[in-house]
Image (cartoon, rainbow, N blue to C red; front, side, top):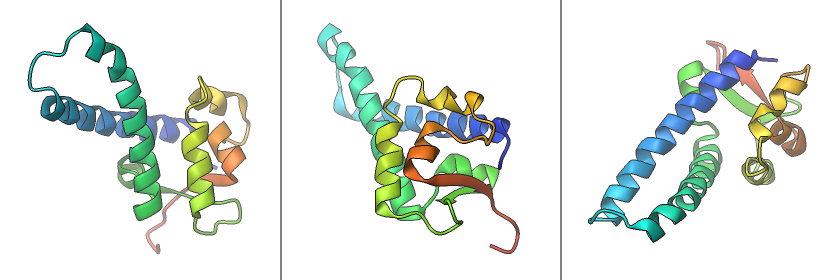
Length: 128
């Protein structure tokens, strides 16, 4: 299993990608300066964008930008390719508050979204 440091790097890189996409979305959507009511819903837009990002990247490409950079990928428990059901569960579980820090309490370096979706993160070797 991979080190917690790699998972943190993946998360930081993917969050940065989502933040950049979010800024672009806000600039394109709100031509004028956002008012108080739009600022309140921005967090929901960001959560939705995160869900769309992770789900679409993992469904279409079976990876994310962070994982590409760190040369890691998500596979099933038996190293098989992840399926729609796995990706959907991973995406939904990420909405649980503090889910991301669940890896701290797991000796196998698995997060709650890994455990419930029956997936794991592996390093890609040069032969893949």
